[in-house]
Image (tube, rainbow, N blue to C red; front, top):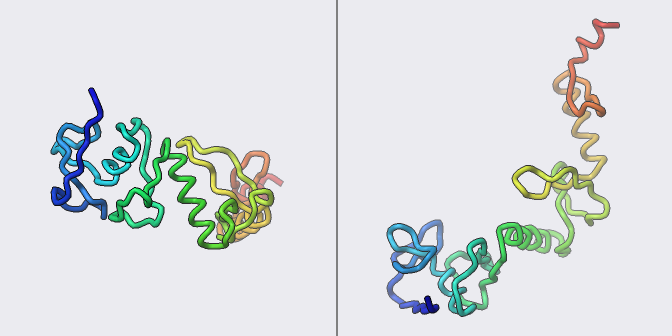
Length: 166
C-alpha cells in the first residue's frame, strides 16, 4: 500500500492529554474511533512514510499542542525518547545534558561520580546515586526503624533479635 497522507486543517476533533487529535480512519495507528494524534501525522509527512511500530514522536519544547515539523523529533523507541527527556531536564537544571540526578540528594553530577546499580526489570536504567548519599540514607533508615542493614544479604534485620542471640 502506497503511503498517502493528507493532513486537513480544521478536521482536528479536540485534544486528549493536551495532544491535538485528528480524524485518520485508514491509518494503522488510529484508534477504534478512527482518531490519531496530529503530531504523529505531521512526523510521518516529514518522513514520507508511516512510522515504525515502536517509534515515538518527541516535542522539543515540551508543548504537546505545538506540532510544527521543526518542533518534532522521531525517536526509534521509548527508551531513546526517555533519554531525551532525561537529558533535557539535566540541561535545564544544570547546563550539562550528560549529568544525572542523584536519587537521594536530587543534585546533578557527572556520571563518573555516580553509582548506577543494577538495571531494573522494566528495562529502564536504575536511578543513579552518590555512594555517600546512599550510606546516609541507609543510616537514617536504620535509626528510624531500629533495624541493622546487612550489606552481604542486602536486607534490614531486627537488631533486637540479634541481641537476644548474644
